Length: 511
Ligand SMILES: CC(=O)SCCNC(=O)CCNC(=O)[C@H](O)C(C)(C)COP(=O)(O)OP(=O)(O)OC[C@H]1O[C@@H](n2cnc3c(N)ncnc32)[C@H](O)[C@@H]1OP(=O)(O)O
Ligand SMILES: CC(C)C(=O)C(=O)O
Image (cartoon, rainbow, N blue to C red; front, side, top):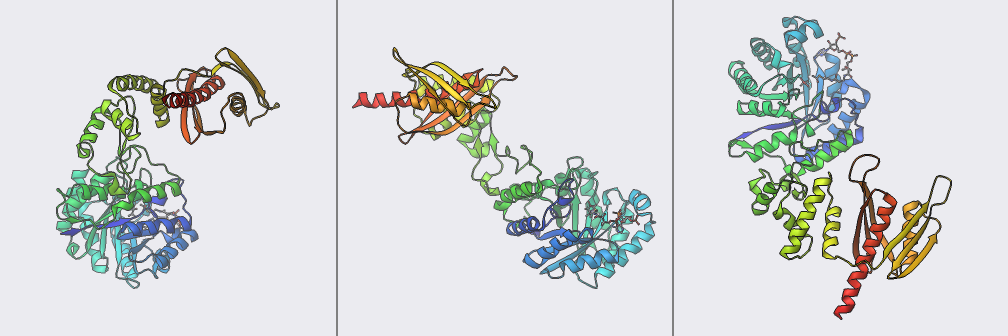
C-alpha cells in the first residue's frame, strides 16, 4: 500500500493570490483546521518575505502539533536562517529550499549558468542540513526544464542532504500524460531518488492542476502539494479537496493508495479559507462549490429520489455537508415537485397536484431565482384558496425624504367600506402594514418576513411581494405580483390575512 503525503500550501502559495493578505490569527485558525483534516505537511509561509509572515510561521510552528511545518527559502543563507528561526520549535520542521532550473528562468531571472545553479542549490541544501535532516528541494519551473539537467541537479542535492525532491509545474504548462511520463522518467533516471520522497506542485493556468497531480501520483509521486479551494499564484494551485476526493472516490482505481485525511472537515475548511481570503468559491467548483451537490433537472432529480448514486459519485456528508439538495426550477419534473410537497407536509389529490405543478412550471419559466418562499406561496394560494373576506379598495401613501410616511387605506368587507389613515411607519411599507392592522379586526398579527423582488427586467418590472404573517401561532403566506410595489405589498398582506380568516371560518363551520 502507498501513503501519499498531502502537503498544504494554502498559507504560502495560496496567500500569493493577488489581493489576499491573511492576519496571523487567520493563518493560525486555518492551520488548526488543516491539522483537524490531518494533512501531513503545512507550508506555513515564506518567513524572509516580511516580519508579519515570519511571526505567523513562528506561531504556527509553536502551536500546531502532529503535522510537519515547512517554511520556504530561496537558495541563500539569509532566507534559510530566517526560515529555520521561524520553524525551529515545530514538532517536525522542514526547510523548503528552491531555485529555478528552466533555461528561461536561469538566464533571464537568475542570470546564472546551469552549473552555477547546481552549485548554489547544493550549497544551500548543505547549509540547511546544519539545522535539520528534513529538507525539501524544489526545482522551480521544472516542467519547462531539461530532463537531463533535472536528473543531475536532483542527484547532487540528494547527495547534499535533500530528503524530498519537488517537481513544480510552476506556470501550469504541463499536460497530464506528458507530466506523468516526466515524473516516471525522473523516478527511473535520477540516482538516489528511491531514497527520498518525490513530490509535485502543479499550477492551474490551463485548468489541469489536479489532472497533472493525479497523473504524477499514478506515475510514482509520493507527495502532492495542494491548496484549499485551489487558490494560489495566478490561476491557483491544485485544489486540496479535488485531489483527496479523487483518491477517496476512485478507490477502485487507486487500490494501493491509503488516504489518512478526515474528509468531513473539507467544507468547513473551504468556507473558512473563502471567508478569510475574501475569495468566493465559484458555484460550479468541484467538491466545494454550492452547486456541487445540487440538482435541478427533472430527470436527474427523479433518478436521485429513486437512488442517490444514479447522479452522485460522492456523498455530500463525506465532505461535511449535511445533505445534497434538490433545487426546484424550470427544469424540474413531477417527481421532484411531489418530493417537495411531501417533505413540506402538504397533502394534495392528483387534480390539485397537476394544477400546482403547471402553475409551478409557469412561474419557474418567468422567474430566474425561484425560492422556497415562492413555491410555498404558490402552493398555499391553491390549497387554501380563499374567498376574499377583505378586499383592498384603495391605497395611497404619502412619502418622501422630508415627510413622515403616511398611508391611507380603504378596505371593503362585503358592502361595508372601512377607511383609515395612519401616521408614521419607518417607511411607506411599514406605514401600509400598520394601517391595515388598524383596519382589520384581527388581534396580534406579527410580520415574520417580507420580500419584494423584481421578477421581470427594466424600471417597469413586475414586483412580486411575499409576506409571511404569524397569527395565533400559525404562519400565513400572502403573495401578489404588480408593477406598483406598494400596491403589490398591500395585496400580499391582505392575501395572508384572508387565508387566516378562511381557515378560521372553516374551523367554525366544522364545529
Ligand atoms: C514560484 C514561487 O511561488 S516562488 C515564491 C514567490 N513568493 C514570493 O515572492 C513572496 C513574496 N516576496 C517578497 O516579499 C520579496 O520578493 C522577497 C522578500 C522574497 C525578496 O525581495 P527582494 O530582495 O527585494 O528581491 P526581489 O523580489 O525584487 O527579486 C528577487 C531576487 O531573488 C533572486 N531569486 C529568485 N529566486 C531565487 C532563488 N530561488 N534562490 C536565490 N535567489 C533567487 C532573484 O534573482 C532576485 O535577485 P537579484 O536582486 O539579484 O536580481
Ligand atoms: C516554490 C515552488 C514550489 C513554487 O511555488 C512553484 O514553483 O510554483
